[in-house]
Image (cartoon, rainbow, N blue to C red; front, top):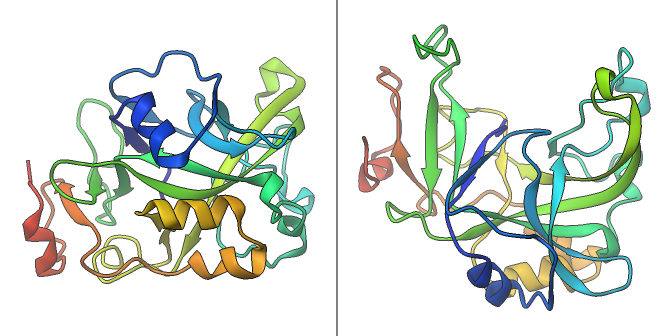
Length: 234
């Protein structure tokens, strides 16, 4: 599931879209790749004092205690089943956030299709269209005390993750299990940040098959729907 995404936008665009009244992010780089646990990623959240703010958190929600092995909890980047007991504590508006995105990656399912220089599996990249405009993932956040890296020991962290759902026809040939829940309108982001869970949970649905395009793909023989041809492949 998605463990890499890119943000190429301005802080002002994020603030205007989400109506964030407080900005404690610092300077957002013109383009930044976000990976689990590094670097901290921009999110818009409902802060504990009720203010809507743009800030920077660590990607990876606390793992279910029964699933933690070893001395470190590396975090859950994606949340598929919010009805599970572990996630119930995060469903209220005080723990909801939206994650700004302009494109996200899914590794090619072709075995050993790796970059020869890095040894890392190659990726397909998805966006709204070839211009890669801003959209959001529906997310959760929390304050957490624990060990994220063994060498650093226990510490206090503010962390986030985002909701996933069944893949649409474009994503499924590449990742058959899930895709992020994407929010593409101000109305959807407002619902996610402010509505009761009984209403907000309806946003956990697959994106329409034509909602995304492939904007970058590896040299692989995997077949994807024709809709992908509308993206810029390079």
